[in-house]
Length: 336
Image 1 (tube, one colour):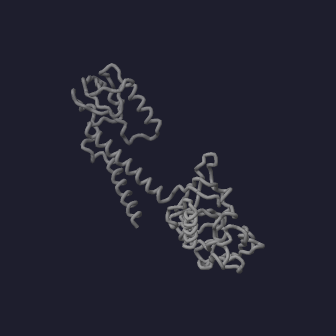
Image 2 (cartoon, rainbow, N blue to C red):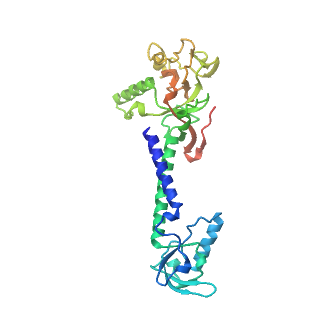
Image 3 (cartoon, rainbow, N blue to C red):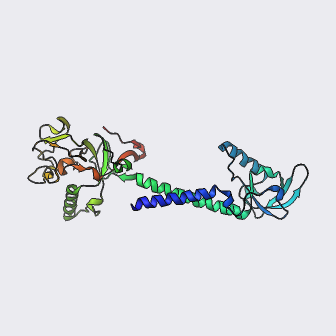
């Protein structure tokens, strides 16, 4: 709820800033007419006008101004006005410019070369409003991106070869929030359900007891990536001969009795049935509504649904879109 309120407030503020920019009548002064200029008056030529239809027009107008010695946003003092059929202005900057912009001053210019002339105060206000609007727009964009996309570093080898250790994945978080079901074969990034949290804490404690440096992060704050092999309504069974089967079709190996994962796979030791999971060697179960059965591609090392049971849909944080690092492997993370 708090995130939604922040998003709404940012949208309102940004819209108000842009509205302010698009209403010149709200500024201290509108555009100045060259026919009203007086000698000694300070004026600012600018490209800030709504008339541009293409970027090419804007670039050409800018080039014409530079050629005449009028630099957008620079304060000029009117040295002299020349009347006649075509009014000309003799102007010069009120302060020194960088070396490559300096020339013999004053310069005589046709005031129509500048699309718009403004009072310095009005120009400063316009510039400040634009800066504030751009900053708020950037913050709004960052907020939107943070609620829809995230980057995640994969620490383990459980998804080799599709995802390698230290790969950085771009993950979209919209579909899970909209309640969209992840299809079979897709990768999901998820927070560990209670049974997996228990395994993570036990393993970290064991590593620390042996003098290692187990993860200090709370288990519930970690994120894991696995592949969906069964969705709600599918029948899943695990046995030593056929491995993991979904609706009668083999999709992966079982955990052998001599594997380092075996203590997690059998009911007499690590019982995933406490989470409503599929216990190896004890027949098929139907995946409940709103849950998944997930496996790691590198089955020999993956602690997945074979060990801790079904994955609740509410634990899914996002779905990987791209591998962004390393650059040599940049590209989509393929589903099966």
